[in-house]
Amino acid sequence: MLRSLTQSLVVLVAMGVPTRIAAGDEKHPFDQRPRLRKRRAEPILSTYTTKESWCKVLVYSPHVVFHDGKFSMWYLGISVESRNNHIVLGHAESDGGQEWTPFRSDSILTADEVPWSKPRQAPFVLCNTDDSIYKRWFVSGNGVKRNDLGNVLENDQRLGYAVSSDGFHWNVHPEPLDPSARSPSVIKEGPKKFRMWMGCNPSP
Image 1 (spheres, rainbow, N blue to C red):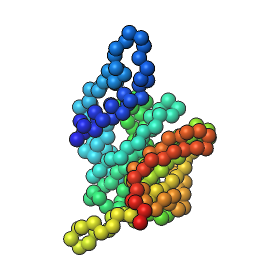
Image 2: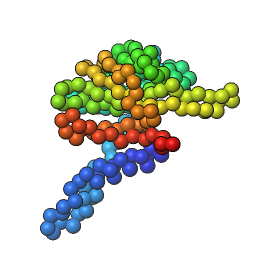
Image 3: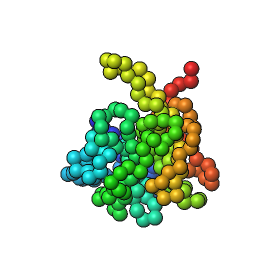
Image 4: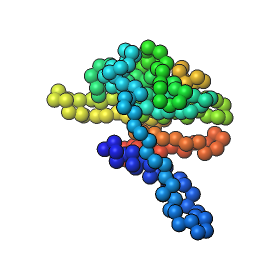
């Protein structure tokens, strides 16, 4: 599965290569696609090696931004059993994108700091170059509800929004932006103009 996903991403990157071919040049643009690099022997962050107490069970859903000469990563973690409502947000920095230093020993945002929800998923961060403000869209809600047999009865997921001047301290919007959301992805199209793609439940 990982290999298939990696290959798909490479194809998507290659599609961004201009399709105009110089006269006499028979090479197809896809032949100019980036080549896979050698995979690291060890993960850059791991529950087995982390010193942070809040992500001893799961470390997942990273999102990386390059700004002011550094890579910044926001990622989720948990230190109790997986698939529950105690997911928190962490932050790490890197100069080259391979060696990462977590921000501090505790998480930078917990469920208690989102007034309308418990867990969170899929953080997506942009640094708005117009005002140097970090904007973050995320999925949150009341989480998974199960019956006595452990079967999922409900999975409440809504679209949240937060802003930050430094990427560490976040002001969370007091209400969700949309009642149904999954994996938001945002691009900036112009001054004060953004475009988002995300999954959601169909309207009844």
